[in-house]
Amino acid sequence: MAVDQQEFRNCLGCFATGITVITTVGPGGELIGNTASSFNSVSLDPPLILWSLGRHAHSLKAYLATDHFAVNVLREGQEDLSIRFAKALGDKWAGVSYEIWDTGCPILPNALAVMECKVANTYMGGDHVIFVGEVVNSEYDPDGKPLLFYRSAYQTLGSGEGV
Image 1 (cartoon, helix red, strand yellow):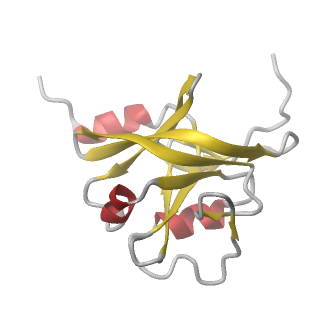
Image 2: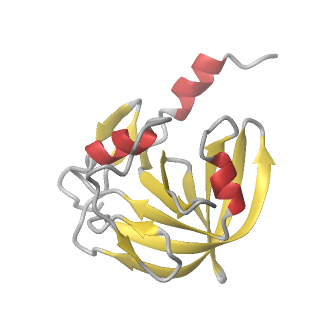
């Protein structure tokens, strides 16, 4: 039985995710950045994470050619950055401030959390490439709240009170 793509997309939309901007520097020194909600932890020892990028993405070759990338976890109120870095083309970095840390990847200074990673592996996964990174540096804001995506819309946590 074939799975209807729209039905599958709607099903996946029921899983709330955080939003990240994955950044690196391309082979010509150009700054690269893409919005990704396909981010996940893999291991604490060693510290590994993963994210995936569509095989049709214009920036795929740049990510495949680099040894490092950074994961910038967006916070509430950063919808504009999510939208900007989700675009396929154009100067995504125009007017965006950034810092350079140890790996040379651009870091969004007001991100909720940042992880600089060394590429550990890449895998083909259907119409995406899965990047596994070993975290070599990290920082986070213990008081911030994440920007969330649920059923094709941005969401916030609310009170932040646990159960």
